[in-house]
Length: 357
Image (cartoon, rainbow, N blue to C red; front, top):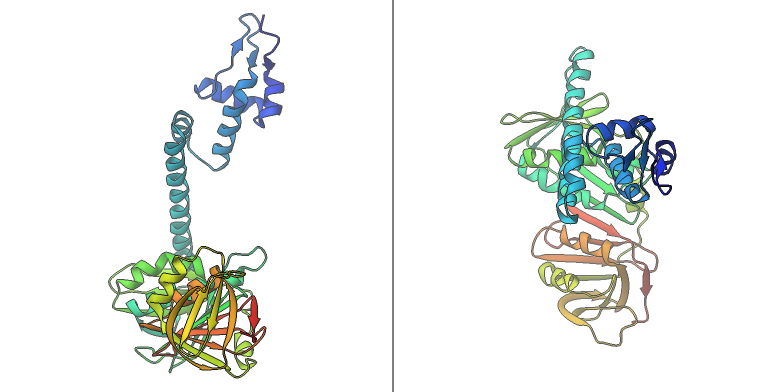
């Protein structure tokens, strides 16, 4: 007769979230044997102490982990279990990316192999750098998939890459190696582009072809990569640029020095105090004078407060040794760009602006 503290299989199934048939399967496979089996009736009974293992087993199976891997996770310590989980998720992501690429080939074949429209030919390393730089301004938000995409506008003279998370807007303009067949605009899935960056960087030239629901990155030396386009309308970034006020203060400062100070900054918020010959970096409500950085500043003295997660990526993606900050006034985006070239620009929205500095 089983211990009265044991649960029959039906009760244990309800408490663990596993079905009775699943419990029988896991018992037969040795992953979760019952605490006791009535020798006469064959009824299975489980202990309350087995609930944690049963719940973990269910969760692992819900993420499609194979039985052998489940057994390894259940037998491992915390660090090893975490490593096994990371390996499993990486494999799922890799399989999903491979499936998307194969699906793109199948869709192309089903469509009669209609040739894509050549929209740009670019140097691979240059395009890879631009993608990585501009994608820092993307975000994954429920119901707003377009914010995770990179907007491409191609003409025979230039290819503009733009991304925004509503708090930052980053854009880079590239000169095509060869003229495009015609103008084209679309928003490409950012995750697909990230997955293709390594191959793009190792290719001398990339031909970008537009096809229904996506683009092809054609590479002579490597397998072509397909990236999906997003159907949602991209925010009107041109209107944002056109509505900007005149610059009231401009500061040019060493990119490396500014990044080094930001990396050592203890707060999630940072205040930049701009005076005649310096940019002072300090924490909000901090009486400490902060860290002054030599800079070329024109216009009125002021201070501006940023979220670190907004300011740091904008500075880090600038090209060249110096970064330029253009400030316009209260509630106006700050333009952060390379001091010696204007093809990469990030608009970062401050969270506080003070003209009384």
